[in-house]
Image (cartoon, rainbow, N blue to C red; front, side, top):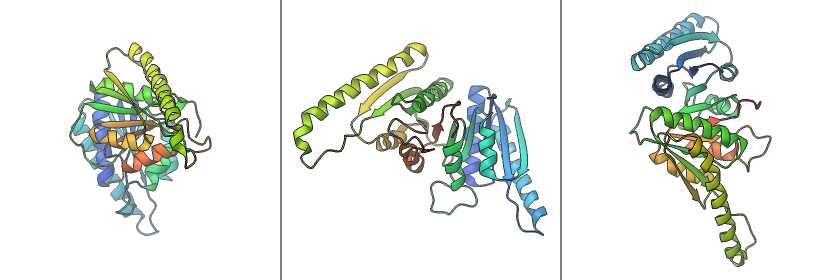
Length: 281
């Protein structure tokens, strides 16, 4: 891993928002910024126009990044190839990869494009998906934390983000009620005891993070609801939501768990999907 953030650029409005988010992040965390435009190969005869457009979009993005992050080293690369494969390759050596929610090729009604979804599901490190221009700052980072290996990686990234922003870190654990028979009312007391047990364990998991990071204000909450819904609700007052690419309940073969998938589609703030570095997708 190197000390640089990689941004996928294509001239779209969401990509511009990603450049702006990444420039601010690079400035706060003292990292370099690398802008990559994988130029789509158009039919024969218009290739020169395609290259000129891509080069122009990359130059505009670089100018914007340098304007927002003075003192940050900004480099660019224009290449031809497969945008998904190239960005996944970039993730292996990057601190993080930042993308807009949709590119120029997406359908207008989609909240998340195929490129951002594929990279978020297969990248070898953190991927941040940015939907639109910067909004009101809340001074709060939210992280989903269930004790799994993926959530441990998410927690570490969230701590770094909170420290750099001097923001509060809110650790969220949501417990989904098990599915019982239609006569589940008889199990209410057992469910309540199970939930209280989960609350205690989840709270204890946060304690070492507070002890290791006394400079970061860390709060935590345990909720009795679906994890995706809890994180999406928390996103309305967060500057960033961080989740692991899979949690304890995920299928081992899934590259992106249902919670991460739902949060990416519905959260209104930027979302970071984090996979442990040593794991291959």
